Amino acid sequence: MKLGSYTGYRENGLSLVGFMFVIVIVALLAVLGMKIVPTVVEFMAVKKAIVNAKAAGTTAVEIQNSFDRQKTSNYIDSVNGKDLEITRTSDGFEVGIAYQKKIELVGPASLVIDYVATTGNKPGKKTDQ
Image (cartoon, rainbow, N blue to C red; front, top):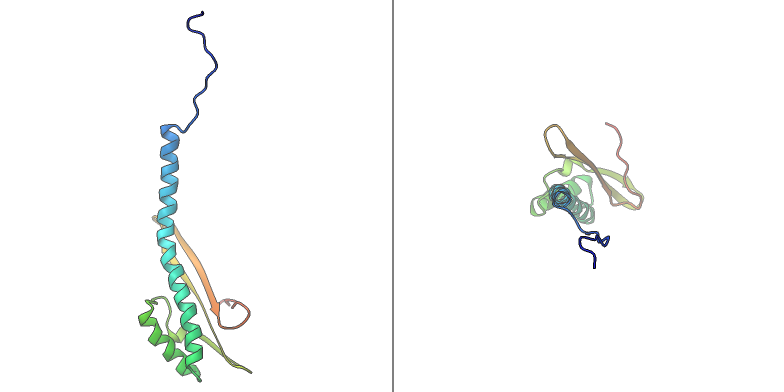
């Protein structure tokens, strides 16, 4: 029997520094998610509101007014009825919207998300203004 012999056993696992690094990354992703999710929920409400506004109105003004009525009940803050792009087609009207949402992150860093929705078959395309 030999004393002090090393059998080659190696410990596996995450060190404390590695664990702290993982926690920081997960926390940053959670904070980013908490800032992005409300804008995505609002965009889904905008898409639903333009579909309902198109169905409720027979003129461009009626579509805008219908969207404005839904805006308050659906907690839509980024756009209003005047921002809608309403075009006449052979089937009636197509309603679209394109807007940007700026999310402040840290200091001068921010995230800008472009949202585009339309009631037509093709997704809308934002044009430079």
